[in-house]
Image (spheres, one colour):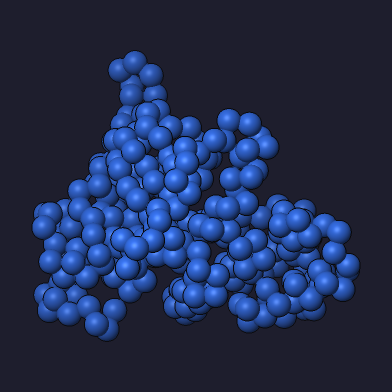
Length: 270
């Protein structure tokens, strides 16, 4: 039960305003939340609802206008580059565009070696590093020996997302934030990527936060769902409660985008 666990990431009054003067845009509006150790949380909303802005704030990629983020029960401190790097050892992300997630000049073995170094493995033997990279690739059904001389852009979108999961397998952060991780890959790869992400949670026990517009996906993967509209959390709770018994018109409208599910109120086959 989530109540028996400790929050690993919390927000109080978290707010983001873009712009100046009369051109201000309120992207995230004083949201509160607690994400618990080991749970899968989905933040669901349409484009422009503020969910990706919130994700960037949680990652420390953009500053907060107001409010506070707490990590493992303490106020997050990312004021220096050293503190930010320490924080990033514990929270990692997979973004929707796999093609923009890599340095095009780095070969795949270099990408994976960076993960080993980030986890303090710089002084490990070459053999041990190869063993770790091979295991990480095998976890997502990739063969490391076939990738060593390749660049990420030589892979398909689905393979690149699997490589991102292999990176997370090596890094073993406490929190994984997956921002629309299947939206830019072909349909045949989407279920595979989701299965690997769920397997990764089972393997490591990390907290996983899905950012998605797909409420059916949220039901399939989540313990807890937050519905976001115009920068606000308008509804939240256990996935079945929110999706099978929605209270807010906005949540019902999101469900209406999946007509068969909504009409029958039967999400068992999603």
